[in-house]
Image (cartoon, rainbow, N blue to C red; front, side, top):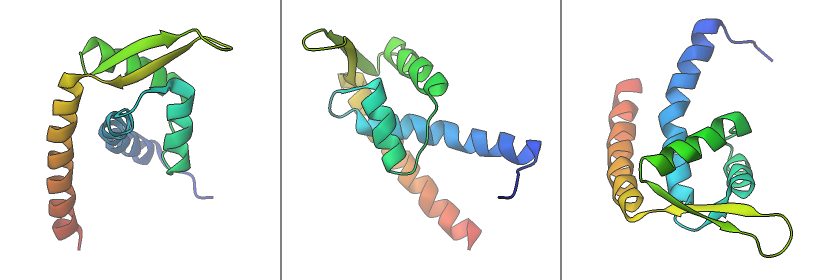
Length: 110
């Protein structure tokens, strides 16, 4: 495995930040709890550490993009997150922006 320089690591983190937000919003069209969301992202090739995911979920909720509720039914209590109405609107806008950006980068990088 080739190790990345500090600059490369920093640039990779920058690139991933916005993509992670978009991926999280996209997955939360249906209610998921943190661990199941993390597993789903990982299954699709996007590893997100717990120390990144949970603060990000709280931030997105405080921005009004997510709703959450506790399920204390069977077993361990779990906090389920889902898109709020505002989150649905923001996701649609971000998805359009992402698709335009991917097209532009595709042209610029070939």
